[in-house]
Amino acid sequence: METEDTEKPVYAIREVAGRLGVSVETIRLYERHGLVIITKSESGQRIYSESDIERLKCIRSAINELKISIEGIRRMQSMVPCWSHIQCPEEQRKKCPAFLRGSGGCWTYKHNGNSCADLDCRACKVYKLSGTCENIKTLIYQDLLPQPENYRQQENET
Image (cartoon, rainbow, N blue to C red; front, side, top):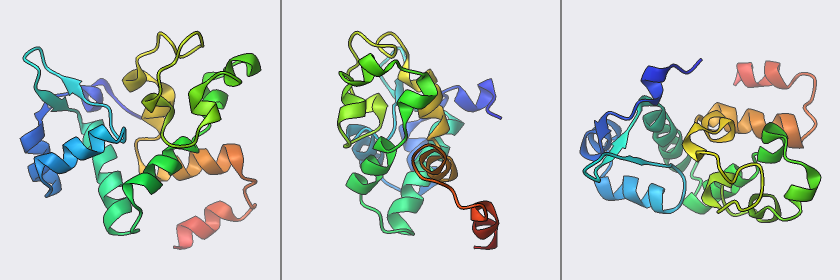
């Protein structure tokens, strides 16, 4: 369960880069591609929470261990069925860029005239749920693919 402490942005980008063993530019690259939503301080500095760091660890793992490209990660994030978690009416889905396109998480699109239009994407259930590698897989499986009965058992054995 996420607490307020894990959501509070307190780490500077340089500190996060050091913790992850990457360059500051790498983190900015992930931001530009919509893989992570950053918060800026009053002075305009990027600041990150523990949840952001977990999301970045998942991204790094997907790239380094699973050999998934940034575009591949964006496609996986686009497969999270935000409409079923936000409970968007069908008429809104027909006009929603996140529903119609498959090139990034729903938080990467501008939402006009729908349930998400006035929501803060960082606080959105869909963005939070897709913050870890395991959650993304579960969200995709539970909503899009029929899960075999022994799916959980197979996952625990690997």
